[in-house]
Image (cartoon, rainbow, N blue to C red; front, side, top):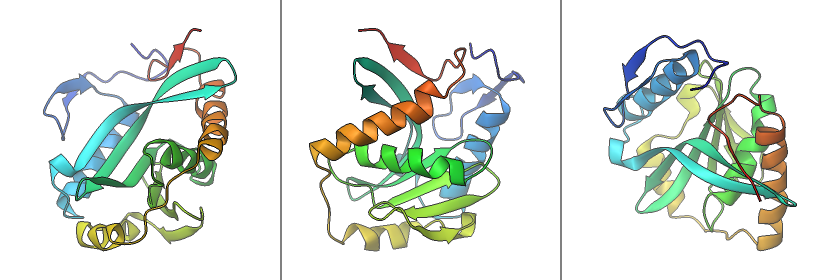
Length: 184
């Protein structure tokens, strides 16, 4: 159990229908999932929640969850990374995750605190929009999926893994049960 979050009971997960622990962070994740489906036109099967991503830094290894991956036509095209606080502090770790999650660069990266969102270009890291309304809808994401796919080279993946480890693992609370430190 994650001891640094206030446990408010249980709630029903919007995407899976499972009963899960109700926390303030989880309420924001549920809000984001509902928004993607009800406002942006995605269907539940387009969205994968909580996939674990293994990151390494030298001899250290950990598995961290990625909040949402949105796929169209069989390819991951958007990554949504939730974290409380300032959006700017979430940009770099969200971009790193987008370069590690698949063989190709995920083109649309959303950094959100549940109240606001910055939409980043996965290739350049530049902000391409602000606010939930700027998140691409399914039609736009299908159009983006027709563009060039860029593979991420292994050297870049190694650097991004180190960055993500520093941001998400080294900077995490030791009692955070969402992150799994893997012993060598």
